[in-house]
Every structure is written in C-alpha cells, then in structure tokens.
Image (cartoon, rainbow, N blue to C red; front, side, top):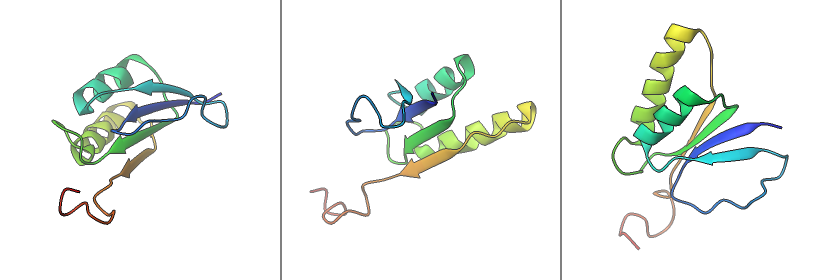
Length: 89
C-alpha cells in the first residue's frame, strides 16, 4: 500500500483505487510539516492554494532532497486551465 500527501482544493474519493492511504494538508506549510513527519510515495499539490503555492512547495521539497539524497514525485495541478477559470466562474 502506498501513501499520498495531498494538498489540494478538491474532494478526493475514499478509498482511492490501488489501496493508497491519503494524508490531507490544507496548505503548503502544512504539507511540508507532514512530509517531515511521515514518508510518502507521492505528493499531489494544487498550484493555486493560498499561502505557499504549489511551485514554492515543490521547490522546498526539492531543497530538502538535496540534504537527504531522496526523491519524492510531486504532481502539480490547477483548475486555471478550465473554461471560465480566467473570469473566476
């Protein structure tokens, strides 16, 4: 069973197919704290979350990897490519 760290503004179905367990983080700072405390197989991050955005969070994760020599896949996503996103609809 894998572990996912999610910091997104979407509803995630539970259970997730494939038997993954999920840990939710409300923002980038919380995601970094959770990542320090636990080991994960993947991070799914919304690039437009409040506070520390997805790019800043990924950069902080990559900086930490330089110290540990590990690599954690980070998937960044956004709804801004959706029709109506530019107008705020």
